[in-house]
Image: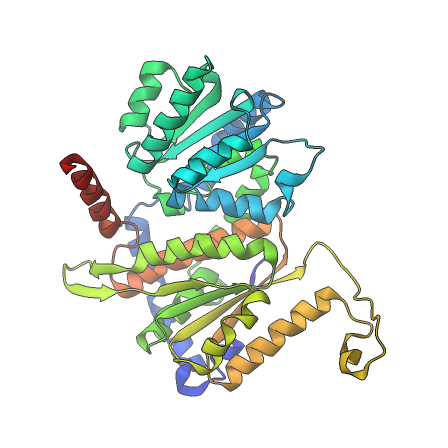
Length: 431
């Protein structure tokens, strides 16, 4: 199970928390859980639907050997979870491996025309399956992408029913209409799960299954953390504890969260977290209609890379940040560093490994931040696999749900995003 260590939150004086402040929130845990349950959000219940796993696995099995490339057309919550799953659970250079058991994955999470054009240099349309992902079925960027690739495949006389799959709203939206009219296979995005919470729905499960990720184990890990999320015992509710620290420190002016995994495979988890936190908690109005303009700004970093690009700011710049470190006990490879010099200046590398070095780098960074009175915590998993990654997904989704109640805002809507979408359409119509 994921482990949370708040030690360095309690060591930085007024810049952190006392243990009494931390535990004083025990009394509101149950009432916040009641409020969350009344919102009827499905992110923590969809993981009990074994039929979805069976349906996805059956479809993926039926596609085996038919395609050399999977191209996901999606943006935001329709893409970031999939990118994270692939980066975390597959070979870092998966698409460069010559002998393959599964198709290559490409996620087109932008509408830059260069991206649209250049992906055609690396995929064969005749051997490509397109997953078109938009819950609303009307996201302009994704519809534009679909129209573009549909025209290309039609021009090559390819059967759209074989080369396109939709992941969208079960009832409404243009994509659902097209699916019904053309007979294109369409999977449902649950109505009560928002896009940024949808990684453990078919949005993430289908592309994951198509590239060989064990989605049953994703559900297993998520269920384990979900049980913690619903536990009314403060000491056992890890998502609530995390939210407590984020909220109380935000009230003390630490309204920036820096997530810094010490594992190359988890950098895209930070990207996924960035949307989850920003879109869920950044709100103008609270639940009473009062203008509050609240939010916590997420920043993604990577250990040890960003010790050499950001750490100067973090150590000596404004003390307005909470640092969230992600650590992995078993990174998946172990390499001893060969000491090829007798020079005393590198004697510290004798009889050590890259594994030990990266962990010591974390320790040095955390200690330096703590000495500079910068609050930081670490979250540790045993290894990067489906079970532990899904625990992390559910840990942070649960924490976001609690943060919404702490800030008295709706963590599950995104009116600012909708305004931008509507204005985009208005400008296009006026041209």
